[in-house]
Length: 338
Image (cartoon, rainbow, N blue to C red; front, side, top):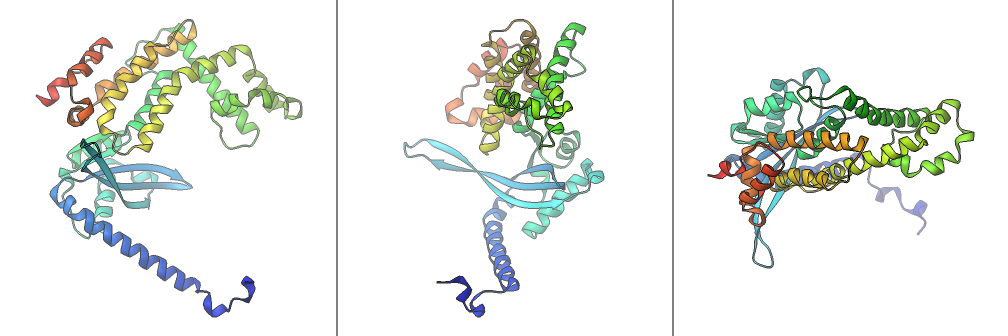
């Protein structure tokens, strides 16, 4: 049938389509509310808050709870169910701890229609001081999002914590890697392209090199530096060290029931770094990657080890403690469940 031959009376108006869509949305929200409200009242609901920016600052709030299920083989499995609560625009100057709490409190009230006591709930968020303070002051406990934590490990590998002892020689080596990242950023900006990561640039470095004569002097100069052997070597070394972090980040973003895995994952990163064959500048890079990861191990809280203990495949914390001791992580995992 020719679409132009369809009578206009059969095509819904924009207002009708909008009304129908909003009605369906309201019905779905009502179903979610009916499902989750009893769990929220029981105190077994947790919240995940994430600030971001897409044209404007926003707060995304989700609620989650654990549901026990039995696999086909009869084994017990936990499944984390996640419910979207709110997505709201926020002003950058109101993101202190108390304002974050009031925003979350209002979003929960709008969704559930009831003023729930959040003091029994956990709050999962990034490592920012304001969100951590909000959780500490107004919720049962703060749980650091490990996808954000892997970003922090990467950052603190190249820019160690102030409390870390770094020699002038080591600092100059770390600066070489940081300069490579900055050079990549300047190169992609000079091409007037969206910001590309180092991996994307070096995956196409030889192809880019074939077009260097057609580039502006600025772009050609940046690319010429990126093409140098010493920078190619630094890219390979940086990629080797950062790849386990990228894989971990991807895993924790894709798996919502991953709290039970965090304590094991962090020490597994230490194991991974130990397997590297290191010499020269890479030895310095690996040293500070391990230090940043060790710091993240010590920042894990009781809830991480309890979740690990309660997860049937990893119930024995004694083996985990041996791995922590081997990497000189000052954390007594077994004390959390005794």
